[in-house]
Length: 205
Image 1 (cartoon, rainbow, N blue to C red):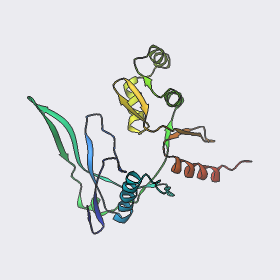
Image 2: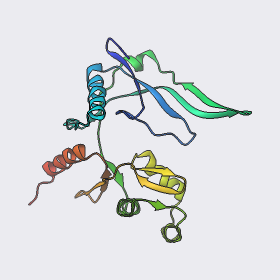
Image 3: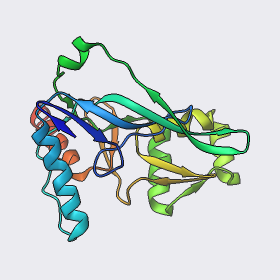
Image 4: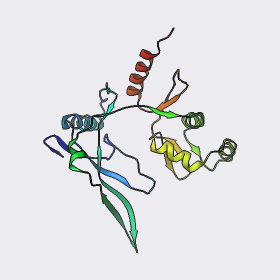
């Protein structure tokens, strides 16, 4: 929905999405006060790619749109009835009209344990949290499983079905920068752009 410079976007994964938080709330609609044509083009390209199986043009920027939470929902049960419960996020007029600049995109910084977990998940297809070998590993490393998995889910690197953890995308990209940090992402186009920027600041000797 577009009105002037403002737009409301449904977060259904085509292409915009948001993870469900720890309390079960999913942000269904967001608002944006930037140029709505950028968002409209993203929606059109996504629809075309799904309708005629065409490849979307590569994203040649390292910026994410600034999206404000508007309406959230979660499943709720009252007696024998099951339905949706909604929550409206109120923001000040000043904040909504401020039109903050798009956020710079970055891959996710990961530690050595997260790197090990992600690479094994990519190789095996999934990791079962009830697997004895996995349980031995987290015990030795002193890892709190719930916190560990939630962090990777919030970073949109993995998804969970019961005790099975899978990557959200079949391909995982990782990198190690000269400052000793490790990074991971599933967006190949932006990851390559970010890697090129790293190389500019850390050229090979």
